[in-house]
Image (cartoon, rainbow, N blue to C red; front, side, top):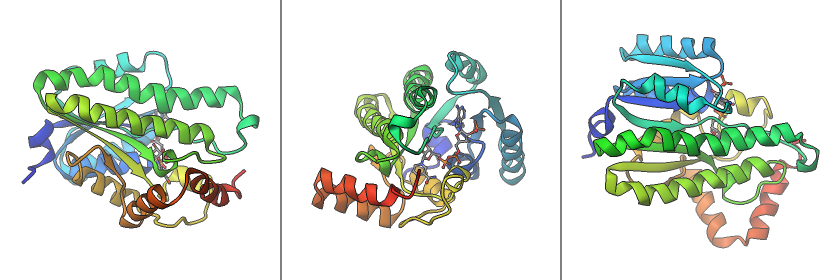
Length: 261
Ligand SMILES: NC(=O)c1ccc[n+]([C@@H]2O[C@H](COP(=O)([O-])OP(=O)(O)OC[C@H]3O[C@@H](n4cnc5c(N)ncnc54)[C@H](OP(=O)(O)O)[C@@H]3O)[C@@H](O)[C@H]2O)c1
């Protein structure tokens, strides 16, 4: 028996990128399991709405921290906001997801991808996990994507940043387990979140509700370094990895993203 999340890891969780979509679903599922939650995002009003729902439905404590994860000093602000609590779980969910021709993308947008998707999880883990090591328990979840398992045309910078998260989490899974810290990467497939629906209305194979992806990811916490939510996604990831050449896998993604400009 694995026991409850608060008993295994500690009473508080941080979700970076929690104002909507998968991040809000993670926050809700953590609260349902009895965890107090620190919600982080840029839009404070949306965070307060999520917080109000969690407090009313699950009787947990919720803190909102309004900040930009691309900002130079975000770890200082966040470390301040959690200095007095026993932090058990950290989830880095936020991402910048620009779509389109790489050569026509503004440099500023590419820098945002690097800041939010790469620098963000790297520095957040470095800032918040030493306290877990001291206590000898804790968990880190990095949100990656099936798009990070091979190059994804028209998502080049994004898919590369997600591959970074997958590899970072796998390395930390091995490095931190002796300190009682479980690390897992959630390699999500398509989910109809506000971010997804802003770019396409087209349903994708294996599409999963963000609530289901969050619940399955938290259920699997502690079982291994890499988790793919959704049976169809798990099977297709396995099949693509095993039976397709890299060239064929990239071409398959290419055929699915051609309609996206
Ligand atoms: N949806 C999918 O189909 C899909 C598929 C595979 C993987 N994923 C992954 O799942 C995660 C969540 O995706 P989603 O679809 O739920 O996205 P979403 O609807 O766009 O939500 C993104 C969340 O991240 C926050 N965020 C973004 N940039 C931020 C910044 N600079 N500082 C602070 N917070 C920031 C946003 O809040 P504010 O705007 O309020 O700051 C929001 O709460 C991402 O890591 C994505 O790569 C999604």
